[in-house]
Amino acid sequence: MPAFAAAWLKRLWPQTLFAQLLLIMVCGVLAIQLLSSSIWFDVRFAQALEAPVRLAASRTATLVAQGCDAVETQTVPTGYQLNCMDQQPHVEAADKRGLRRIEPLLRQAMAHELGHEPTVHLLEARLTDTQGQPLVWRSLFGLDTAQAHLRFAVAQPDGRWLQVDGHEQQGWSGESAWALIADYVLRVYVLRILAVLGICWLAVRLCLRPLQRLGEAARGLGDNLERPPLPLNGPFEVREAAQAFNVMQQRLIAMLREQAHFLAAVSHDLRTPLTRMRLRIERLTDDEQRERLKNSINQMDAMIAQVLDFQRAAEPGVAEPVDVMQLVTALCDELASSDEPLPVSGSAAPIPGNPLLLQRCLQNLMENALRYARAVEVVVIEKEQGVAIRIQDRGPGIEPALLERITEPFVRGETSRNVRSGGYGLGLSIASRIALAHGGTLSLENRAGIGLAVELWLPASNG
Image (cartoon, rainbow, N blue to C red; front, side, top):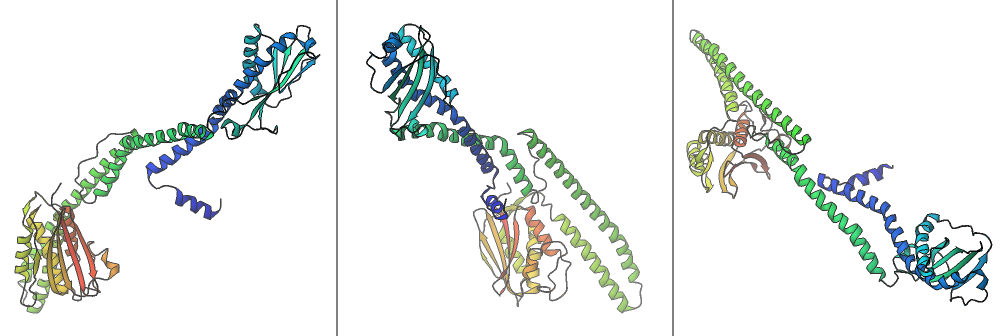
């Protein structure tokens, strides 16, 4: 298959499981129906020849009863010819299967007319147009006027055979062609496709709903690792996938708890020698060296404190109503100065959360803005689903390549906002983890040539 044809088929292939299942089932049903339509064709062909066969038996029964001796003196119906033969005629028709299907009908009709069952062989039965050309499928739908050409032989008591060759109008030809086609298409194709649609919908509802829950749980696992485990229902394969997902979730929880315990233990053990180092430094007589060592120890202590803050940021604890406006106003009043007044605008209703963690989150964001930019302002926007706190500044912004990674741990924007070295690359990471722990989001975007905008969105409910 050429590459362009494969690409074209790939674009046409549906993306959703429901659409793929529907396409496969509809194409399968249509293919099976096209193959099985031959049954309808055979039945319709027999029905189209039933009336001509019965008419032929009725018109020729008297002639057959009189035998071959009276062939020359008999009055033959219009459209019929009679011939007397010494031997049984040979069947030359290609459709012997069709003849075997119609021959019992002819024998039954002749027996009804004669009063006894004669020996009858059907030699030919076909539908033709007015010029004698074969006409089958169009005639079955009534699209063209057709007539039945019948040729059969009846055994005579003296051993000879009376051959009858005649024409009759096709049966079932009085019905509208479009009515026949519409009835066939409606019953055979449309109704079946509608049934397939219903079956696909039911299959998706019953079998694929657990898969949808599995996908939703996988997407939400990064936001809430402590979410309830998936119910084990649905088909066997889906239950197996849900069970594996629950096991994976428990292993992740255990791994993160072990990591938290490890960090807490290391931080505690590091602070003990730092305390001893502080005591020993006080005994140094060189003031310059003593101050340098003090600064180094303070930096190490601050780094440990930030690592612990980063770890605790993912654990919001028990939620309580938090007055966002009061929290933002208090922080702005505390951090404002004569050079940076930190104006606040907007309003919002209380939301559930941890006030200490939210204060730490907003404080990190505001301190970053004050440290690396100017003309900082805070806008509080109340939305139907929650509250958005937008911190805007006029500064260098962040390089576009770093925007997506700036909230990762230990990632610093040295070449953009951090014109003065400081921090350990955990401030925005802590703020982002606090937002996620509350079911919210933290987004950053560069304003059009005039700085950075950081938006903290928090949901109005913790459900």
